[in-house]
View 1: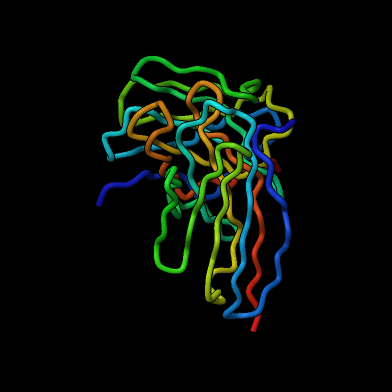
View 2: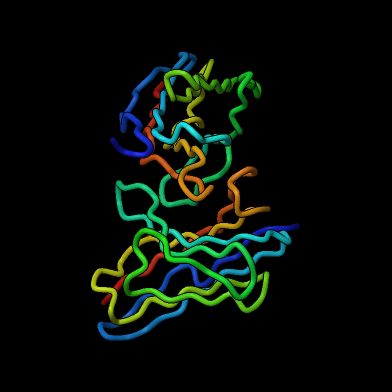
Length: 114
Length: 109
């Protein structure tokens, strides 16, 4: 079955550490996205990529970095520069980067700073 | 004006009731519109696309009003299992989807 897989499901980070969240899709989708969701709030776009080896900042990119070396993979690194990283992180993909087909989401990673 | 606005609710309705949500959007150039369902602590899942002519999927009907720039979702014969948060997602700037903050529905016995 095609889908989008995020790992790990839960992640605990110490202050000052960088952590990387994995996102893999086997849907052959061109575009991939990273969102952050805080309790009781909407989805905020961190980074997105419409094609391999290219990505753009979203609305809240500060303190985050990404790479898109393969079509299937779009890992997100939460750096120590992100001052309030505790949140639910969602990766999504879409057939094109034009918003015509809707997005498919992974099951998310809950990141907690300890 | 926010790009996407939804009444956060909660909408508390009895089983079997009909309930409707609206979502207003600001980008008049939007061509694609979607409704997502999000259960507590889970990822959003695509519920249905919204076409210009409106569309229906079982108990769910989605409509688009371009003149007033809103989309609606109607749920008939509500079930307990319909309890969730419903997010609207119109196509926004840069052709990316812009998600609303969601409307919470609670269906009660």
